[in-house]
Amino acid sequence: MKKRNRSAMNRHRLQRVSKVGALWLLLCFLISGCGIQLGVEPAQGDAASPLPAGTKADGQLRVIFLDVGQGASQLLISPSGRTMLIDAGNNSEEQRMVDYLREYGVERIDIVVGTHPDADHIGGLDAVIDHYEVGAVYMPKIQANTKTFESLLQSIRDRGLKVKTAKSGLKLDWDEQVDVRLVAPVEQSDDSNNMSAVIKVAFGETSFLLTGDAERESEKAMLASGADVQADVLLVGHHGSTSSTSLSFLRKVSPKYAVIQVGENSYGHPKQEILDRLKKQNVQVYRNDRQGTIEVVSDGREIRITTER
Ligand SMILES: [Zn+2]
Image 1 (cartoon, rainbow, N blue to C red):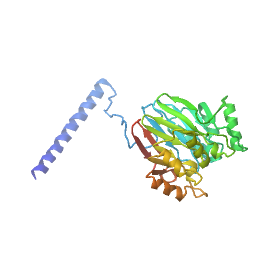
Image 2: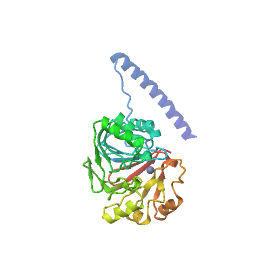
Image 3: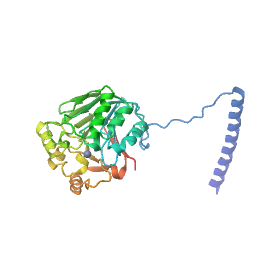
């Protein structure tokens, strides 16, 4: 009983205090005409903050696996706020891509990579290049006889840009705190998927391997080249097709987390065999079709993953 009385009293006192406070504020406002800033602190560093949080330089590396349905696209934001876009989904996702970049506050893309000329990767890139200032464009040395590919080359030309050749051993000058290097394609192939640019991104003690649609042939060549493919986060090759993620390659990468960029599709991606293989290797799997856009943030030591749903 006593307790309740006391709390009732406190409440009463609080009401009086707030009444006095309100009167004082009103008086101050009337006298000085000043705009009083009520002390609302902006929320900072909220781990559970909803996507997206813009491209501000916050000392962290962010790798965002954008949900572009059946296709692939990764937006990277460096610790100093530099941007890189790897692939941009299908032609049908052009508007979605442009909107995503706007939502993330992207004004300029320092590096654009088209991993290989397939439409589910480069389809949206022409619109992105038309809409945004771009620093450099990298693509592997393989052509495609498609309108999608021609349209991309046209956009690149219109911007006065030249395509730089993506191949293994190349180190990309992006952010001095982040090591970005290509580990594939190692050798020339007639197969578009096996010409995929595969990118290893390392920041502090954390690393990512972004594989495009590289298949077994390319995985073998990467292993034979002796390139360091180990990564905490693996973008599962070719949307989880059995053509990729061979056991020997997966063991060498030895990821903790894997992302499968997949949407509704008639190919049966991702294949159960690959999901089982990942599970057996104790890899935690994230999927765009189930979780929407997936954002992986690294402070150089630890990795945090947030999903849209
Ligand atoms: Zn693909």
